[in-house]
Image 1: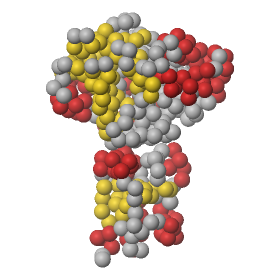
Image 2: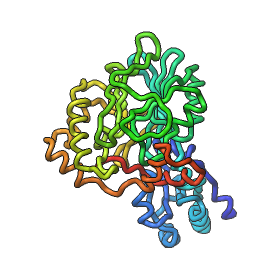
Image 3: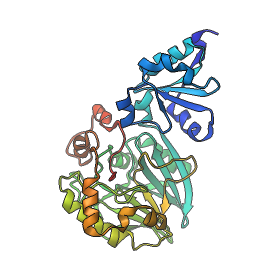
Amino acid sequence: MASSELISTISTTDLVPLLDSDQNLYMIDVREPDEVADWQIPGVHNVPLALLESSVDEFPRDGHLVVICAAGTRAQQGAQILASHGISSSVLVGGMRAWASTYDVVTGGYGGATVVQVRRRGKGCLSYVIGAGETAVVIDPSLEVDQYVRIATEHHWTITHVLDTHLHADHISGARSLVARTGAALWLNPADPFSFAFEPLVDGRAIELTPGIELTVASVSVPGHTEGSTMYQLGEYAIFTGDTLFLESVGRPDLAEQAESFAHNLFHSLHERVLPLSDDITVFPAHYGAGVEVHSDEFVARPLGELRHSLPALALGEDDFVRWAIENVKDRPPNYQSIVLVNAGRKELSGEDTELELGPNRCAVA
């Protein structure tokens, strides 16, 4: 068999379901160790391109080998090396650059409404379409807004409101683009420094999806990650916590250079606004980190009661919490200052700005 016949390609979209279902999947990332340590697809085996040929005996001959790099060039070279040893493999088209904009969705019912969780797998970003009857609300949309329009169309919903939980620092918000596309109302917390037109939130303001089902603003301000951090509550069933509470941690308080005061605010937000809620209410965060397992057809979400017991930080007193939050933040999101300027409306979005998003999210206290 010719070497070229041993090399195929696979898209990131086609790779996603295989992460759960293909027991023979074996991913080889041929980037350098520092690149992989910074950002990777869960489950990869890192073998730098320069060491690949000397490592071929380590790879399963009966496996489904997928070769990965930053954009595809090194992966193609790696596949050619494997083919020269009679090993077939698939090159991940676009590499990690394509992985950054790869999505899947999970859909389920809560309190008579339908929740669609849109997962941006390469960034750990989560956004939501919540609909009932003929109406839908979108929370924390990413820049690729076609998918939210498509979801609404498939469910015969009209998007009436677009909400961001806070001024994002790790990815470019699609809120304004989605509003321009749909004519929906844009609701934001004015405590964050947005410089464009929007409807300011007031405490307890409600959106009626259909008679008897409201998406309510659970708190105009749960400051800590940002001053304008906001949560949205779907009855007694679900809470969309933004970057205030994650499944593995809480939002970092240091991005505005006021880490100590923001950490104190975050403690009070958690203990006065979040933890008093029912153990049964489901927490839907805006992000997830590398330590959170993601599976097809399962929400990235947990009952608050589980998080109350699984996150030690939630049991700390205020001073210990503040100390922990300050001491355990790691590297800040790459290019976060430029991303904030775009999301605040203080810098025009250009094609080059989408490159600012590459890499993992770093919005949680480690």
